Image (cartoon, rainbow, N blue to C red):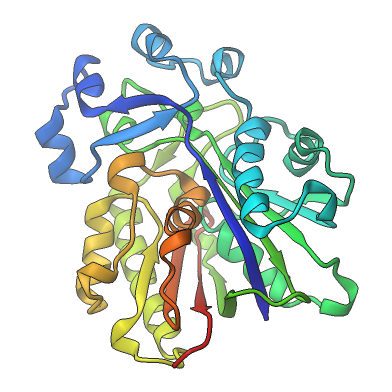
Length: 330
């Protein structure tokens, strides 16, 4: 059993709305974007005038102009998670970080995040692109609680707009920046608990979604969309089978790739639209931070006795999920 003591999120202030993307003159507008991905706005660590003048043609140059580092945005999310847990950085005994685009090959991004927070504890990267949150929970759940510290910090720092080619409308409309954090324990009980996890990969599809070192994000859009819908639906059904309460009252948080993909999963999975939680319309695809940031934004609205299915998919190709329970199941 994994207990979640606190969740946190952070989105940088610079906003990329559909009007800004229209102004880039890349063949898109508000109607085109909403019809295809359902996204109205995104956040970025890049200055808007930098995007407008360079279209981020050289991704390596974007790091020097960024308003925040990955460690800084991750630390903001972690501070929120720690405050909600009623803990301090000194209570953390292990840090795991992961995501789609770490800023250095070495050191581990987890070490930079820990340093930013003043944490003196083992810090390593455990990364599976957009499916990192499920990977963290699944792998942590396989460990012996007796060998683990009381509290572990799981962090996904996703500032992927640095890898976006803003000359390409098919990818420019998708990405937003965001970070998420979770303070978890295998030893100390909490109101929110993880009761089931899954993690699966199909490595033969590794080339369908990629960010080459120093390069731009690229994907085989049609194939990836179909994969995301299919695997999300399968994972949702498997999680529903582990519900202890009313399966028809299950809440759903999916990978925040785009709103149309999520709506397809919800329709096929017979999820009540009122129980579908998302933020992709306002923040874009925040990679591995997307799903946990949705949960974090709902922290004060978690339904007592409720169950939440979290489903994520990502490059690799890898997909997974987690079934969460809140309080006591009636």
